[in-house]
Length: 271
Length: 333
Image (cartoon, rainbow over all chains, first blue to last red; front, side, top):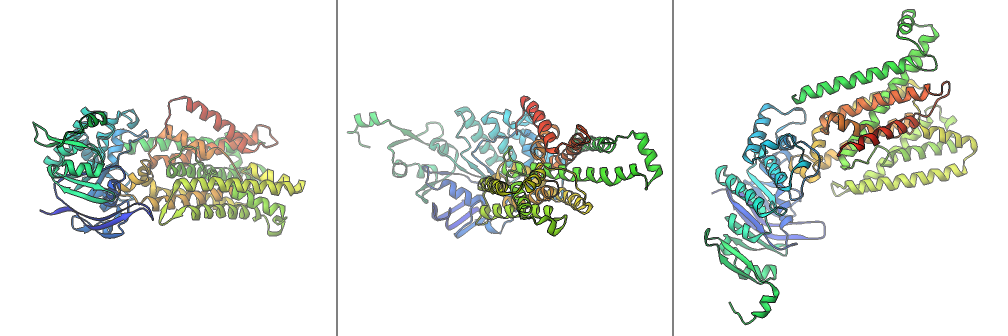
């Protein structure tokens, strides 16, 4: 199967500061992939390299077999849509916000949206369950609703690859599952390739079919959730003692934490 | 209401407002005319003193008011957009400070009689462009533009310029001091028709070119990084817009001196009235600013006629009060 992303020996970073080095990564089309790793491990840097916000210093980064640097700004926005982590704060109407996703399809001189743009925006608002919010202001929405609207905006770009930076971080478990179920549906129904940064290892294991574990600017492990979410990998990367189990319903790996007190009382326990 | 219809409606309303300002300013003054007088005067045509007042004094002044009011308000809207900061106005970046310093220098050195009537506008323009250049150079780093450092640089240069100007004023003669203060207060009284034509042409071109970036400004509302994700070359758009706004402000200040508040208040009033979308905000700010300044100027020259108040006094008071009223309503940037 063709790769949506093909990264070889990638090095990139900020000035003379933090760099990610020697990244090798292939993500097949139609994947639902997750990037995990502790704070400061280079997840966001890798993410920025893929979204084109950081220039590649060494190595190659191919998006559907074409070098990312060869894309124009507009072309790139037609192929990759990004849902960032920061919540949105500006008083713009929800519908207008979603319509912004159509920008890459307009020339500088086409002044108004076409009927077709409205249709596409409305379609994805319905798909994300946000159509009824269309006349509200973004500032009037809850965090979960803003996230859904932002996903509708990203989908209106009709990308081949959807990047999300911690799409569930500000949300309660109900909304977390709502967002991830939506992404799963998009992945299955629309064959949309998804790559997200996610901190919650259990959600990563439950939803992703492919995980990239990063540590200190390098890739530590790549593989299926079962392979990556092994307690030895997690303990090495996060420096934390964990217990891994299997979810009795889904059969996916589950990561459990143990408090320091209990660990001290049970120091005789060996795995 | 669909977007084009809504925009058309807003534009027509604002054009009517501008027309109203134009007529009021044309009729009222040291000598006031009724509309019937005006028709009579135009029938008589040239040679009449009244005709000369209307066509040689009032009309050029109105046109300058449109140019300066439109330019300041438009560049205020642009700058608030690229810095994503509601408090930014055309003078925040030290453009006016630079112009004032240039003018003060020429006055103190006694150069204005030396180079003719164009000396002060030229000095003002040179001063403002020097500041723009400094701000630009200091904040362009490795291909990117850092808007926050740009803003801070501008504010600092503005402080330095005003300190230097105070230094000049401390050593200036009484005569020079008066000239400096008079210039700083700003006025639409400009006898040189060429300068008025330049200011008017520049303001319309600025409006025209700003529209190439109206959509980019919309995307920049979401932040530079998000704008890039939407396919906008943020750095390029910010550079172009910065240059447009600086030129508009520089020319306005050079011709009319420092007229405060138009560039801060009008864009905010227009955000409220016409919406935050830059496709309409740019034009509505221009038209609103033009009408507002023409009306303010009419007040400034009639209120204590035959004397004239500095127009900045009127824009400051009216603009400030109007804005406080608006802030009491629910309003977010």
